[in-house]
Image (cartoon, rainbow, N blue to C red):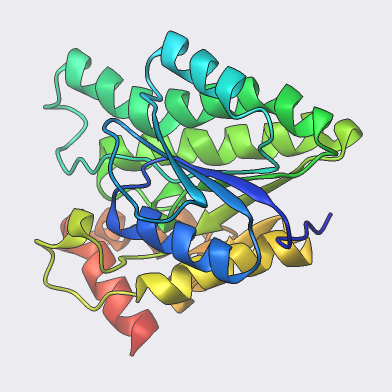
Amino acid sequence: MSVDFNGAVVLVTGANGGLGQEWIRQSLERGATKIYATDLQQREWNDERIVSLVLDITDDASVTSAAQTALDTTIVINNAGVAFREPLLTTDDQTMRRVFDINFFGPVAVSKAFAPVLKNNGGGAILNVTSVLSWLVVPPVYSSAKAALWMATNALRIELLPQGTAVVSLHMGYTDTPMTKALNVRKNDPVDVVRAGLDGIANGAYEVLADKLSVQVKRALSEPVEVLYPQLTGSALRFDQQPHILAEQALA
């Protein structure tokens, strides 16, 4: 199901971040008439088309309030997330739950809260930023949460089909935002990633693979598990090294 951006009202979570600002800029370029720029803190956008809205995606009351306020929303972009690079076995349960709250339960809660809003406005679309790491366990806790979001996105796509709501998952490798600042690897330009995601919404795509790395990893899912995890064959490659090597190969 394709969704027209001309006249659209778009809600973006995590809007104050690098990728969030790009979702806003390009949505307006495509003809959106209003953007709900949501984040933990309000900011001044100096554009009457942009409405700054406080939203904590891990707080049920905050999510409900946002859905009751932004009743004209036609497109939801679940962009908010948190990076976490620690191993599974040494991460305490409280921290692990926090990572899942932000990267999994939060986007699902926003999707559930806005589903009736989108239905009332003709169907619209939801885009979930799921990452290539929903298919590749690096780093383990973050990837586990993103994998759960990918599967939930598949479920939402089927469940919201009868009401005419398109549900899109966006997969990409390392992208040049503050979240990846410390990584010394080649990175995607946020402009390209957001363009691919918005094209996916406009063209009726179910999944958007925004770079060569995502294409490579998605293809490898049908191969023996050792293809994605060569350390299982005795390689000295560490979990935190593998995606860097794959990214260099895919983006070369």
